[in-house]
Image 1 (tube, helix red, strand yellow):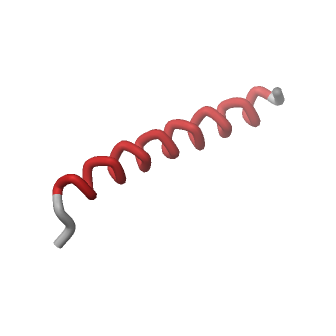
Image 2 (cartoon, one colour):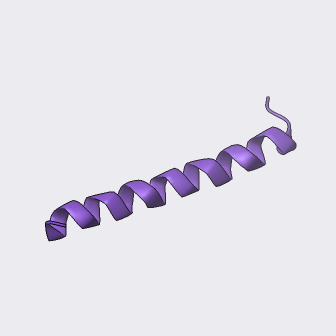
Length: 32
C-alpha cells in the first residue's frame, strides 16, 4: 500500500494530465 505522501502528488499529477488531455481533445474538435 502506498503512503499518503506518495499518493497525493500522483493524484494531483493524474488530474492535471486528464485536464490537459481534455483541453487537447477540445482543441482538435474545434479544428485549432
